Image: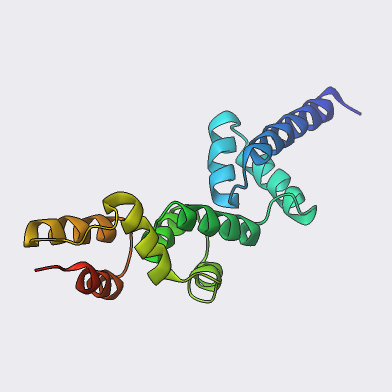
Length: 158
């Protein structure tokens, strides 16, 4: 084997090791892993070959990433609109996103109520200012306006 071939094998092993280290920290999408590896290694073709191999071996999986991401972000009180945008930024396709956000086991009304409870407690909104503050918070968290309005109707005390 030529020294060039050994260098290519060494570089492939280096890229794979870097990818596995990143995956050991948390699930990653192919898109974000590619971006991170591209910043460290100039040979984009080699990065793609390594990522293809990791996918075939089941170590890299966008479906699994989406599931874990939606679970984690919903537990932190984020809504489906924000999570959808974040997944799109990470290169996750519409079908995969839809499976986890629209067809998944999440009760977004309940998640919204829990996020609001953690932020504002159980006291009702006593004026328009307090009501507006709650509404803005929940919209920024990525909850649809219909769910936010329904929640605001329940906590309005004036």
